[in-house]
Length: 335
Ligand SMILES: Nc1ncnc2c1ncn2[C@@H]1O[C@H](COP(=O)(O)OP(=O)(O)O)[C@@H](O)[C@H]1O
Ligand SMILES: [Mg+2]
Image (cartoon, rainbow, N blue to C red; front, side, top):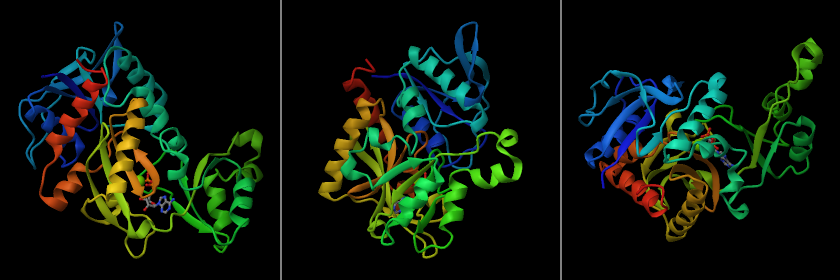
């Protein structure tokens, strides 16, 4: 079965060995009619969702440029499937998600627009991940509450992270024994007290910000894995290793990575999680796992295929896209 598929990327100017080139190339190789579209050109013209796009005529080769997006404001609707591989500027988020949602009324998505909006966040992890697989988790904008939480037990270490960011940005580790804990919690919750004190609430407005707080997972350094789930199948991923000087193991920040192996328990867990994700409209994601705990998942552009390829020399991208399409078919989203 061959489909007409629109892959939405951003900054489609230069080839990179990442999802933006790997996934469209794999779809092309598997015989589909693939278009690349620039997500930041989504507009509505005469009631039709449009974008700048170009038809892929060959696989991308390392070092070559993406072709120019030659079709300006062409329909984004005349497709069997849309695969969103990029976000947008934070200031444009509301319009971005409304445009995607409108498009998704008309065309099935690999990850539904509503799931991209609601679920690509540290706030909503619990909608997919069973409680027993989450570290103790809080989402709060209340500095005093979080301070009492951290001070209630000097044995517990906490990880404070933005609800909606990524790649390790502003991920802080703290405990009652950490003298910097107040400054870190204050920063994470918007520095409300200092801002109100300095400017006045009337001038600065509401300053409180939400932050996600998770208990530190003790086995994280000995067993952190990124797993790419297509449908309910772990199709790719990698084992990663924390640098000595860092509690974060994001590979984009330089953490070392090796080939992924999953224990039978991990494999079984990931497949069960994948089924729950599919019920939520998510057919391709990357989860950060220190079994039995899930730290987060990534729905928009989860790194995995490229690092796995670099670690093993084996390209699993065809298998990944075929598995996604088979799962979408099995669930009735594709004919
Ligand atoms: N609860 C936790 N316990 C231990 N380490 C954690 C925890 N949460 C995050 N980390 C570490 O910090 C890294 C970044 O956090 P993560 O939740 O994945 O956010 P990001 O979206 O920034 O990647 C993780 O890859 C992991 O190494
Ligand atoms: Mg992560």
